[in-house]
Length: 259
Image (cartoon, rainbow, N blue to C red; front, side):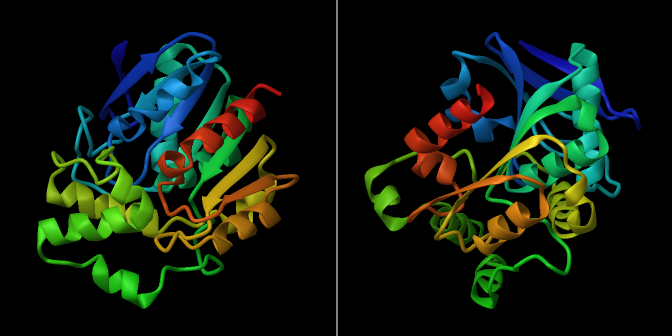
């Protein structure tokens, strides 16, 4: 099922719902639409109804040219849940989606039953930043070269050698340049450090130990800041651990949500 909700500022938000069972909100990475979750969402169909959102600036959602923020994206998700009449949901956010998920749990604790944070960071001055080499690689002027860089940051060489896909984590090609810039700023300005101890939802933190895009030390920081959080690290996995270690990761998430 596909539908639309209106954000507090009137922006049209496209959402997608599949399956039956407990509601599970899946939040994608920066500058990506719901396509980020195309393969993985089916791993939860036995127990959950999955809900994805095209962030403002992506997919079929509105693309206003004004500042975006991770708390603002969280309010957009609440608008979708309200439209669907869902009072409480499980939330699984990866990368920038994990930043947004933090604000959902902080600002709307009554709406989040269980929380899964993948390959993400608390943000702010205490976060562990990617190294200078990665920063240089990410400013490639050539689009083809940049896509290759992102792909290699997402997956290990072994994975890429054995898999032709998926390629749904390389960004939404339909995004206007201004929206891509606003996504990048929103993600980089995220800072939930001081508020993370307020998270009440049971929390599972997942990360690949070879993640250079978001260094794995950030997972340790999140586990230290969020009360009673659990942490699992996938050896050899990079940023897209949810694909590379899918068999294990999806089982861990399902088991955690169904406890």
